[in-house]
Length: 253
Image 1 (cartoon, rainbow, N blue to C red):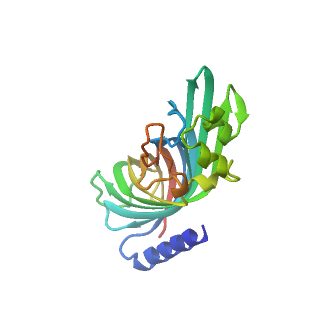
Image 2: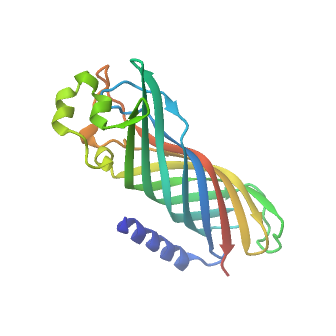
Image 3: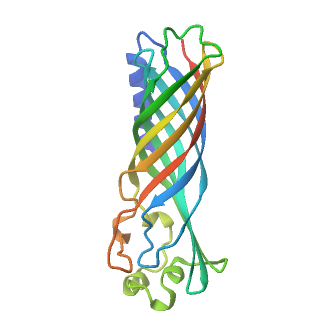
């Protein structure tokens, strides 16, 4: 975590030194999104139905304008993603909730569609834009909740009922993990795509509303827990999210 913060500070310093013709901008944003884990890993247990899972996020960013229509953005953020599952298996209601809390460093390129002649005199103006880039993710915290018939249960009892899991010997030997973070990889890289509008209240203060999609490129499962499913196959799991970011920016002189 400390290394990510240090990297962000270096990016801010680099952008500040290089800024010449146009002023830097500083922004903060809050986010609401749906979290997803594509291709669930149930450690040999049955596949379950996906449920919608609404989650929060937020952060700060520094914007370095290349010209009047293009901007490079770097920031630091806290992003929560995951997945809920619910299914009825052998007449028993099963629920599983995965929550992954990431500390992020997003680096994005922003392109404004509207023709901008000057940043002055923008009061009341709205510009449309698109963004794309990469997000570095460090897992800060992970939690897993297991329920059968609305009763909390342990991971081992959930995925290995009556010793029917094909990985019974492995699971019995490991027991229940003391911390859910043991099940997941610490680092991930996400591809991010977005688009939205930028509304100026005055020459310095403006608001952004953006739809943002993020897709993790790496397998989120710890290598020791990449167990095959009941068909004897294993596929990597990827964290992703789709939601809306609302930000408030101030242009520095």
